[in-house]
Length: 302
Image 1 (cartoon, one colour):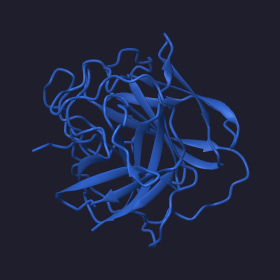
Image 2: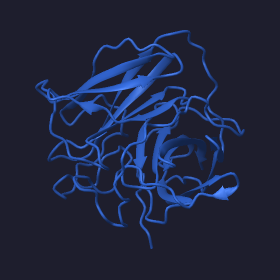
Image 3: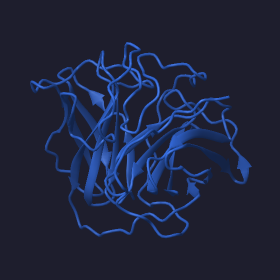
């Protein structure tokens, strides 16, 4: 039996619920494709990576294979945790214009962290999401010798965003820190993305089966097709055939899970445990034809 990566217990009620409809947030865009290593075999830990993640985005093992500290809060809600801080540099990001986001991860003495474990081929994963969950970006910034990270970014809409840094410091356990980010321009509030089980992106159709269940593990399966035919030759992206990020409606608590072992499509499966009833926004990254695309879903755990 395959064992999926779980999203495990975190507390706090969801701050928002959505009405029933079909659709995808128009702001969701593809992430940048890159050279990939083969997908990991079932049960195989990525070099320099960690094992399963809990609801805070923490690993259940640290880099040495020992038990990691218990999570105190969902991932991405804290700008500082375990003596580390996500420090965004002042930026002048404007909606619809290409800019650069710069930041550092600093220790308790204010020094930039420069040693990281590699997880899924990268030292750090950066996720940006608008507060209304209509815009999502999964980026891979470049680190300078002084520990400053930078990433080009273009965001389509003005408003409040949350930046998530997902990383494992050398010798430590996985951690996700979050900080607020403002994008200037003419702001037009958007309705929350409606619940949907089908997403269309660049001619691909992705169908979601399964529903997160509060307090118990539940399977989620995403099936990818194109022009009515199943896609059976998905390409590895960061060592897997799909990556799933979930954000809790309202406070944007960050969850990051990885799939079961399986063939290269058309299905990519996960196991998730929801902490409580409510709404979640799920973002699936998958790679095909040399390009990474993102399919988005809104579901209710009940």
